[in-house]
Image 1: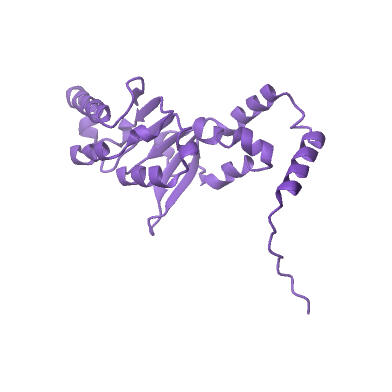
Image 2: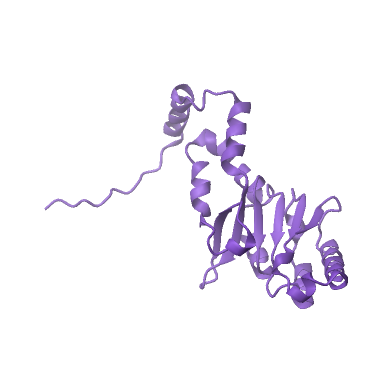
Length: 209
């Protein structure tokens, strides 16, 4: 009885990869489009999503894609899917990867619930990908506690070289904080003070929502 086991994949040589790239450029309708139009298609395909960065029970990083358009009340109904599925689109071929791989990081917000996850993410993600990220979302747990917040000072957030915006999600804060304007304002000021000591560039916008 014949075995139906898959044969292991063999990596292409550089010459074979070059020939395949040339053939794709000549035969692919998509790759024959003007570069500006391809870029607009990439933006449509990769943007308007949030990347939730978490950890498994074995402390391995887990990245999930959360499409926008859902309210906080629907957080358990959000159709999340694995980040590798999104990244796989950019790995269609060598040219698409060169043009689009970093856009996956540049065009999406990355949400963190734990300071420790930020540290692990910084140490695990390739420097080029990390340097392409422009927006972070902080939904820290335990929510808005000073002790947890000051842990941020130990994170070298400045390693996100292209960072332009930090969104602090107040919906994770206790109701007593969110519903009291004075207390909420004090916590917002505390966030700003801590982030100012996290090697965050001065032109990074901090938004509370």
